[in-house]
Image 1 (cartoon, rainbow, N blue to C red):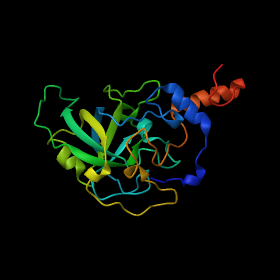
Image 2: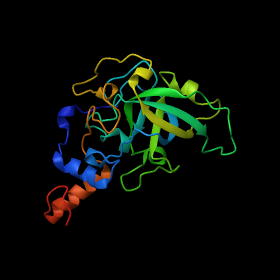
Image 3: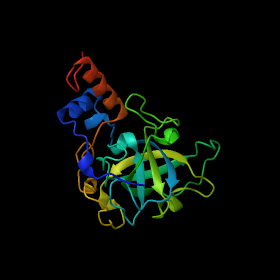
Image 4: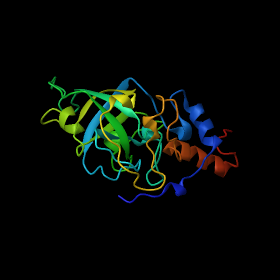
Length: 227
């Protein structure tokens, strides 16, 4: 996947932060929704993790997180989720409700990638105005197969789960970071305090934030203002 250097970032400044504050206590700059948990989440797996949206791959268990929690939009660079670590536990299969286990091991993953809304509406279609996906989960983690996490997390024959997540210190994560793949790569979340602290920072705006800004522009209101 082709990535765009961080130089192309759209800067919204204080207007995005003000909009985030207006959306509620879990809203972050740009209208993204980011929570340290504990909370509910859904989980799938994917392969091809060598060019992650954060710009730095890793050898330990890694995952992509849904776009609304990632804190950026495709093509403009890392979001504030980059580098943060999360403990994940699966407890149900949404496609096989009668299945009660056994489930795989709980794991700690580092977020290095984004699960974009486009093409992934079932799992990663959360928006600031509709904050859960089609399985009623506010956050989704797409666990990288290439680094081994999916192999221990998912029970045999089950490729999608729901369960719980909580942000943890990356001292609980085992692995090695790779080298930056381009200018603007960032995984500073690995050294930041838990959310709502800032690591890499958010970029651009969630779909809802962008819609409000466009509406205000057409109405003559200042960005982030309301009539």
